[in-house]
Length: 95
Image (tube, rainbow, N blue to C red; front, side, top):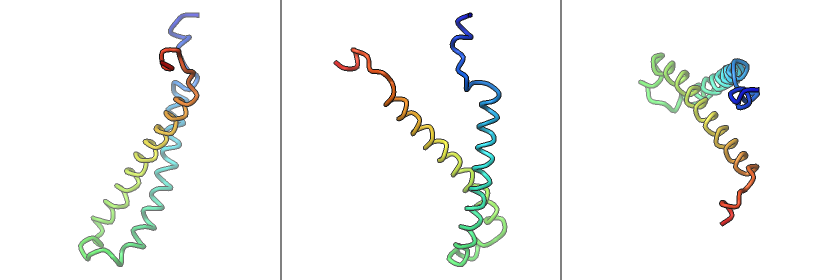
């Protein structure tokens, strides 16, 4: 077995990317529904200019995208913390 194939993790490749794509699509749909409900609830509190269709579309598109970025950031942070906790300590780290 060559060294390059020994370094390939099972979660690398096309399947991994398709999985990430599907999860992101699901998050986008759920975040879009939440943004729509939030906008409808906030509409009476917003100034008149914010109730125009142009600004509603910006809100309903920008909020789900921002939430997806935040959700993936939190997921990466969580996995990083989990990996650090599971990583074996070396003698150099204990000094």
